[in-house]
Length: 430
Length: 143
Image 1 (cartoon, rainbow over the protein chains, first blue to last red):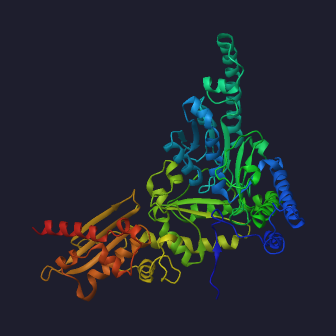
Image 2: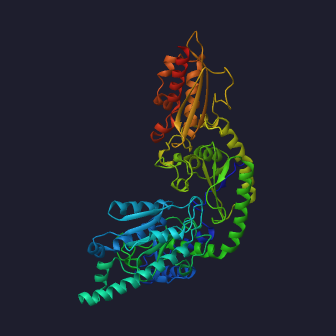
Image 3: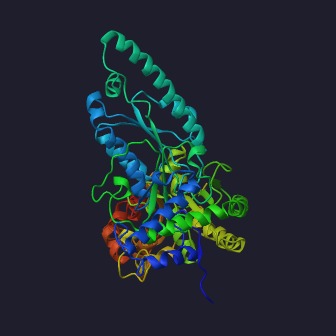
């Protein structure tokens, strides 16, 4: 009998959709030319990239020139955060302050680490609590905004517990803050002009009153959300948004950063000026073509797939909580991605669970310390304010397009037995 | 942890011996021990770190040998495997004498298992510590 292979780790990465693979195919060997070439072959490839960019922009309700292709989610997050920080340059020097950043305790490491780096280099960073349900309260953002806040970064949906954040409400808070700041600055400016007869010089205003009304800039990492949620940048109200291919049945190693027109972003790499100078380097042509196709497919299937997979998720959660005693769901039950199941199993450690499930042909992940390179338990589960046992005993199943009820029923055939076995010799007997 | 996987393990995360003791652990104790089943108990590890072990020992008073060793572990694969392996090291061939058993180091356990990733060493190989505590308790009772 063929050994079972059930893949339930789609938040880690998704398989490449064969249709995506097909549209990428010509760009490896036949249409290989550098899009920067002046000759026909180069121009043709350039044309294909332009089309891909337009297709993506359409889905996001953005303009083509607002899409910057990168090597993936991590690079896009770094470009967003370090790009904003680096853009302050002379202004920050004049102000003799580096600026303030607001983010959350359960962001992806691709956001947290650049923030920590900036913190070491003089920036102030506020890491917001996420509440016990894992949903950011826009009021907390409002209360943390300061005159020197330059960036707010809040993920669209969390990668471990799948909770969906109120991005458009947060955007509203930020917009209000900007316009209030703008009015106040104008008022102060007029007063000052009268007093000092200074010139109407934007930098002067900044140097007197803080960063101008473009700040704070609002960034959101939408890598996990892209397959299931609305990506309309105007509805969301974001200035920067991160997407990548590897979570939406597209290729790995390609992503994008949406950069709203008018936002000044300093690149983090320097070279030949591709991507309007924001991200130099010869374009990853097959990757870009694949990313656009993957996004088109997921955009088209979204409504139907969300319905199908939500049903499966709720069925699965229901069975786990009912059939395995002392299990708890992590994160809000409704405001979560339709494919995310994250539970804590008391008295059992996550790595042991994952490896026992692996023996049964089931692939999933855990937030236990043993599964991390740092040997720290999941910062996400810890951020929910739960005791360490919850993080160590956490198990994440993320469903995908091929996931069926039959597969989940199989998991429910073996998981309770595995939990029983591991609990039978656990040193924590509750 | 993919980056600590050794190359000779046929695609499994840890050594074959770890796999064996993890999937088919030996000498573990189901639930609470019966009255008089063991002489002493010791515990090591912490909830915060993600590994907790308890061990129980039964000593033959005449020979000073370990007659019976029971354990419980809440922890990852190497935590479970190392406790199981330790129990086997202590009880095989009629059982070790207490003094000899006390000489077993985490390194000996790791070697017995065909190696454990260094990063997992300090947090998951704790059976010897729990055992030492059990022996202390046993000696106290004996006095």
